[in-house]
Image (cartoon, rainbow, N blue to C red; front, side):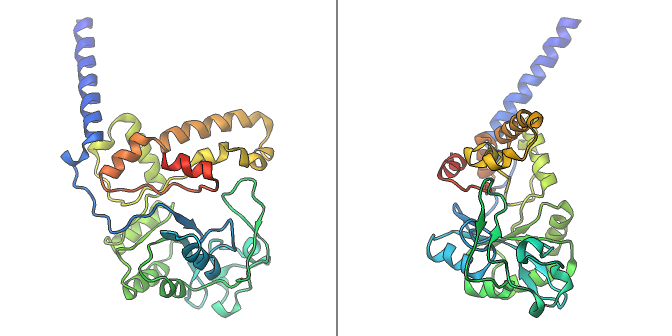
Length: 300
């Protein structure tokens, strides 16, 4: 009886694995391929924050005119008087070098951006600067770059913020060339309910779920409502340029963290996973690549 049960269980597992592998390669058997209205290989994170002051009109123009970027990534939040502005930090200390919050001030009261701005997501990098030190409105950016795909990070769970962004997307006829989202699952869920036609990103919870489904072989069987997979690229922290980051990590934790980053990178950046999502019409936007080697790895 024991041999029989072993044979039955083994046969079931083999059959499951075979079907899962086939559906990873041919997902159209179960799922209709999503319609893509734009493609982007070169995305300027906060307008190219490593070169000029992040999320400024100067940075956005340089990304488009000098680098020919395919997409602008930007962050949106709202001032006290209801203006949707392009800024990442809620607090003004890093961005402007002063105390306070953006939602506590009217737009005309916002201070200028610091002359030298610390760069996030670039381990080992120092400061960025630029001549444009004004926090722009989202309306300005949409008007300046009509038709250019944009990746909008809706920073906070505010209904008025989401509705204002959606109104501007409709006014500028941008519903099909804008992808929006946030790592917060609650925000992404509300965006989907507000306007399901706008492409949206996976939340952090959904990225974790996709990885779990992929490891267990269940991913080919599960429908996916999101349209764009935007995972972090952990190998950035294994790059030699990240030495400044590792100096701040206590010695006993370094080996553990390096191992964790390596395992996560193998899962998140798996060509099999990314290829399966691509066959289902879901592109991958890996972030944040800062060196030629990181770009090569991401594309590979």
